[in-house]
Image 1 (cartoon, rainbow, N blue to C red):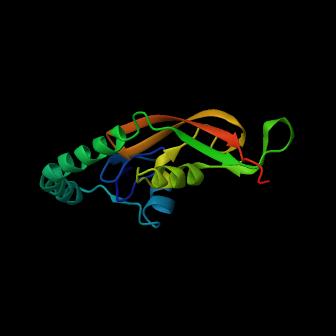
Image 2 (tube, helix red, strand yellow):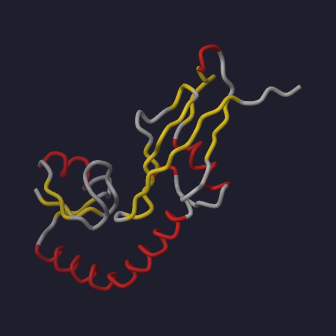
Length: 152
């Protein structure tokens, strides 16, 4: 079954992609959730026209995304957290914490566009994350998780 995606779907595709999925997944999940529509001939023609109209806007968005990714060059990102024995964190850090720190440093990105391998961090050390500014513009960033300084 061919589906035209109306939203980005993790591990499947981006908005306005035509993807082939199993019948049950399309009928019972994607279409009722508003994530896609059936790819009929008329829907494909409408999609093609929309993509043509959006082509020049897309180049502007890509340029802005590249500028945002260039802001990451030389950026030192350090997250602090309370630490117990053996460099274990009290609780954990996630992509939301990294997004908050990046926004503080002037790189505007939503947490859903940040992927940390293993998804959560429970120890201090150096880590990397993949940031997606646009479907064609991604960047890799290194960051450090350090213990919080004790207030005296």
